Image (cartoon, rainbow, N blue to C red; front, side, top):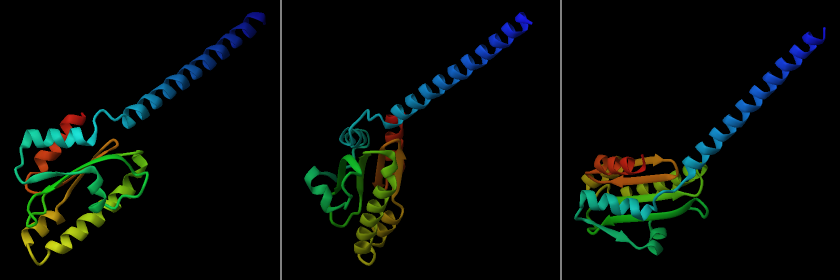
Length: 168
C-alpha cells in the first residue's frame, strides 16, 4: 500500500516536472522568436545604401530625412526610421524606400500611407507618362520582420533580392 502510494506520488511528480519543463521551453522559444522578429540589425539607411551600392542605379538621389514627410504621410508612432531615394528626373517615377516599423502590428497603417503616396504619384503620371504610371501600379512592397521595402522602377526584383538576402 505504501509502495503504491509512493509510486503514484513519483508519477505525479514526474508529470508535473515534465509539464513545467515543457512550459519553460515553450516560453523561452516564444521569447526568442519575439526578440528575433523585432530585432533591428540594420537601419533603413544601411539597407538602401547596400541596394544602391550593389545595383548602382544612376537616376536615384537620396531624399533628406526631414523631407520624407513631404512624400509619405506616415502617422506618428508607425515607423522608427526610414530612408528614401527618388528619381532625379520629374519624368520618372522610380523610387526606393525602406521603413523600420516601431512594431510589426503597425504594418497596416504604414501600408495605407504607402498606398496613398503611390496613388497620388500615379495620378500625376496617368496622362503624362503611361509607362511610369504602369510602374507605379506594379509597385513592389516587401516586408521582412519590422522592415518594409518599397520599390518602383525596372529593377524591383533585384532590389527585393538584395533586401531579402541582407535580412536572412
